[in-house]
Image 1 (cartoon, rainbow, N blue to C red):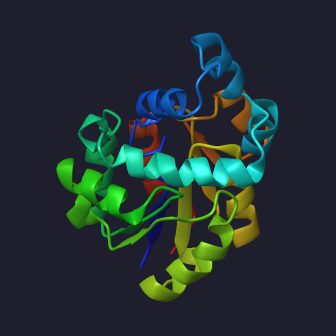
Image 2 (image 1 turned 90 degrees about the vertical axis):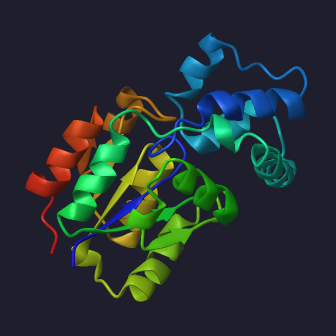
Length: 210
């Protein structure tokens, strides 16, 4: 059985505008102008955290609070155009699908359901640490009864590339999410997709899994 593991925020769902609004609410004075966001898109998560000047322990508390606030804005989250078709077509082709994310499991389930694609996912793994996805991959493989050689991961950030390497999974990095194409390319992901249509073609025609 071939299995595709998706990241959530920035990969399946366009959550950046809402995330920016919540961050500005929680951290008054934070610079999240278009210019600053463009710079952040070309930086790894660790560098963004360092540049923000927010201590890591405080950032973790803010993330927990942010997830709760996000729960009141889930109706604003939509899948990226073309993603719904990719999910449905992959499922139709016999692929198992899962989601792994630092977002809460409850938020993920609600958004997938509201977008009409929850039934296509056999597993949802939420509340994962920012840099802990590689450890969760092992749980997914066990739960879904698949081997690493039967899986591919799809994500939008540098930390997704790093996690895929640690977990021994190939990755398709998508360029429409939180990190930009230039920095993603510099970390040499297994594959890279600029559109959902290209993502589907890569998974079904180029990725060697099974």
